[in-house]
Length: 337
Image (cartoon, rainbow, N blue to C red; front, side):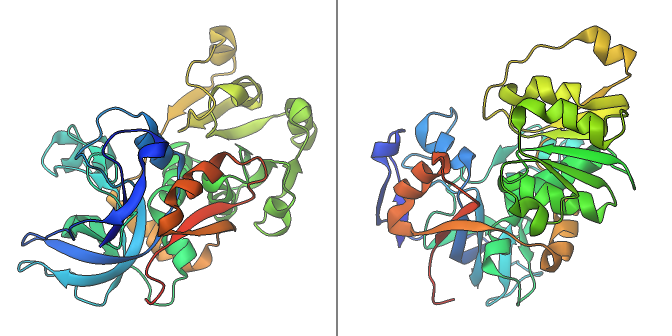
């Protein structure tokens, strides 16, 4: 089969070539890949993130396709099922798993990072990680469920977003941002999108859009009539941290799951306790939440900027940082399904 593979980390070392098709055990399935999302974690996997295995390695954390073959003891799936892969590798036996927090498994890892991923014609996965999706679900949405969609859904649930609350989303037109806007609306919040892209309001339903990054705090104050936001979502990291924190109102919550622009931030402890702000770290999502996301998937939409063939995986990863990027990047694989 074809796969984007590297033997040594470094984008220049990623090449598409023929490799052996994966085998499956009794509780596994073999999936013919139709599409894969392209994410910053894929770039980091190829570039420099530690703990990559196996080597040679196939990246790709977000994958969807059709089941080609099932193991002897698989009971919930069958050949021909249209599926998506829950990309948290978990043991199912530790205290976190037993309490339903698979993404916090004591031995957790990410598919495509500690296992081979979806930048290939085929991928094998455990039955417990594979979920059937609606036959008529668009491949663009299916390829965006495992990271782009479940991550902001879990984050807003962790932040306990409520009806009629003000939600400020930094990076609102990014991968997870466009989904956070949709979930914010579904939860009944008044969504303030921080973005230069007006389509996040016209096409995705944000109630307000702030395009002047230097006036975010001032404009949030105006929109909320001085109360500031109940929940602020920051998926970008250090560069937007100060504005994010300043936008949180009394008894508000700041939830974060990204460090793309840096991980080290300053914190004014007096402001934290005087306004009784809650800082919420969030990662991934549970399998239960993933099922909930799949149940809602037909109501969701994705803006795709560019599609690449598997042979152009290197260019697809480079395109993540293009200034003109205006939506998701996907790898189209096996267009015959």
